[in-house]
Image 1 (cartoon, rainbow, N blue to C red):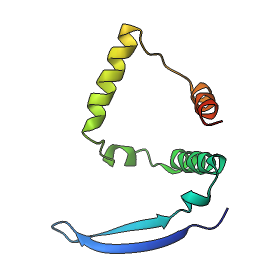
Image 2 (image 1 turned 60 degrees about the horizontal axis):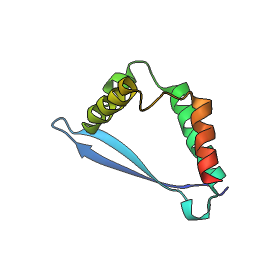
Image 3 (image 1 turned 135 degrees about the vertical axis):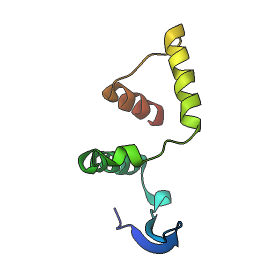
Length: 99
C-alpha cells in the first residue's frame, strides 16, 4: 500500500489563542481494495485503543445525534427486533456483505 500524504495545518483558536493542529491525510481510497480499507480501519481502531489516555476519552465530545441513535437501538433491543453481535460476528457479517 502506498504511503499516505499528510498535510499539517496549525491555526489559532479560542479566546486564549490555543494552538490547534490538525492533520489532513490524503488516502488513496479509489486504489485500495476493500480488504486494504478494512485493514486500515482495524489498524486505526487498534492504535486508538492502545494509545487513548484514560482522561482523554472524557474530553472527546459525542455528537448530539448519538443519543437519538442509542435510544433507538435500545428500543429495538427491548422489542426483540435487534440483537447484539460480538466483534467477531460483526466483522464476519461485513465480510459476507462485501464478498
